[in-house]
Length: 241
Image (cartoon, rainbow, N blue to C red; front, side, top):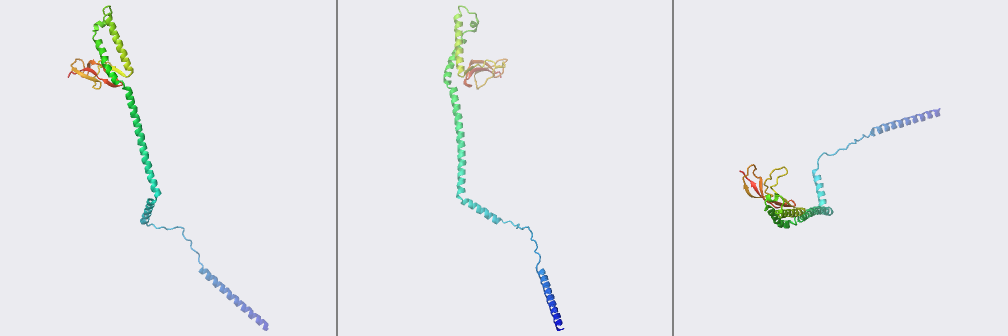
């Protein structure tokens, strides 16, 4: 009887201990759950200041300029670049001057070659004029008359003068000397007009049927040497007004 009573009391004490431990563990679990809270997820965005900082920018620029000014290698490089530009400019100017000198020298050589006989040809013009005077001294009626024993010598002399004159003019023409006669009509059959560049007016007169400025008489023919007027033709010009 006593043993049964003791066993029952032991069982009750065990039950009370278990209930106390369960209550304690439940309280601890609730406290832990309350103390542990979920961590909120932070935003992935970053915020930046929208305020301008000119002072910092100016400082950086000034520092960069000072660094460049203080950099001896950069300064030397700039000086070398300037020297290269100057040398290129001088080289181009020298080339241009050389080409101009070359063209001028070539032009002078051509002029010397073309007009080397200018003084010699000018001295021959009087001789050519003498041929014209000699031929004009013979009357035209004698030249147009049939050849006889009386005028045979005269006609042969005139023929020889003409042949000598033509040979001389052809020889001079090979070297650039040409004669032009203002009394000859133009290609379209009109009378030549007075041109002060190639003609020299010795007198003026009224002529019916001609316009002012027309050449009516040639006193002496003109000559050109390679396109340059060596001697202007002496002419008479019409002036009706």
